[in-house]
Amino acid sequence: MHGERTSAQPVGGRLTTALAPDADRRCAGVWRAGRRIACADAAALPYDARRDQCEACAALDRSWSVAADTRADDPRPYAVYLAYFGPGLHKVGITAVARGSARLLEQGAVAFAFLGEGPLMAARRTEAVLGAALGVPDRVRSAAKRAARLDLPPAADRAAALRRLHAAALELASDGSLPGALRPRPFAVTDHAERFGLERRPDAGPGLGAESAPGPEIGAGSGPGAETVARSRPAAGAAASGRGSGVAPERGSDAASGPGADAPSRPGAGVAPGPGLGVTSGPEAGAAAASGRGRGRRLPVAEVTALRPGDTLAGVVTAAVGHDLEVLADDGRVLLVDARLLSGWTFLRSPRPPDAPGAAAARLPSTRPLAVPAPAPDPLFALPTPLPRAHP
Image (cartoon, rainbow, N blue to C red):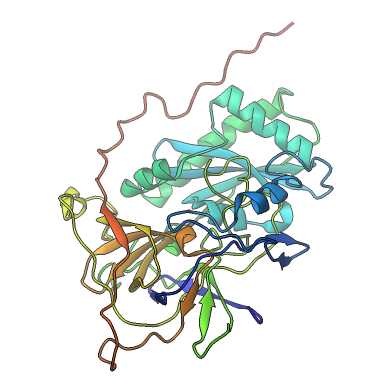
């Protein structure tokens, strides 16, 4: 590439990715000091890989990473956060204070609250104590997040759940169970549901979210040949101020994905306008709508599993949650698209119109039906009870 630029892919905006028949997918390399260092092997990536790095480049990133515990001397202050993904699904994690809420947007946290901040090792110790004492995990799988946000309670209930968890954590601080170097923060909740497009306002159009919120960032540039291209390196989150996916996960991220806690900013996914897309449907098509779940938004009925040379994906982004995009395709169905599948490709910015001389019909990406999971049972307790501690 000969230069890059970035812009946000908004909820309610048009998404079109068209691949030339001879397109290939290559490793994005490693990032150091805020810039990209090209992969030494220009390694090819599998079409269905949900990452932007080859194994060798990912190993280089892990060799100096807070996420992989190979960089324990980071002098920056770190914040401990409590994240809410849906009823009964919380997690604890850490992020550099300077990154603000970027890490929570990357992870697709529907709501969150900061517990406190301090040195890296104090934050790590706090994370471990909360996991042991309150049973709050530091990792949540993507599938669990998707299922949990199908049936979100009102914002007030989400805030109340985080308030209870925050209070339980501060009780541990009051009796000396948390590191003294951690400076507690008063409770304040940030809710991302509207920003992600998970809740509709009354005047929103069909399938659109509450506002035109930014989604994964777009990284574009010009490449060789007569056509302009967009290079895809998805940033894992609606704010996309964090790094692209495919490297060692930060503690508390999806086990199979995610940028590190210490990751700098990097360009995101490349998209461009182009022709429309039809998708196939499965036996579960319409089941989501019939379930009455989703708080007023249309739920995906199929998932894109891979992009291949010659494929075209097009539609309107109705929700953008972490690396998950919900796209209202041109035939009226909603697709779930993992933005990490877009990484490493060179997309045509101006695909040949379908009616142009010699133009072939657009080929659709591979999809599979999405089964609608049964509603989660009510938890036995609002919060895990802290483990009893012996007193001398």
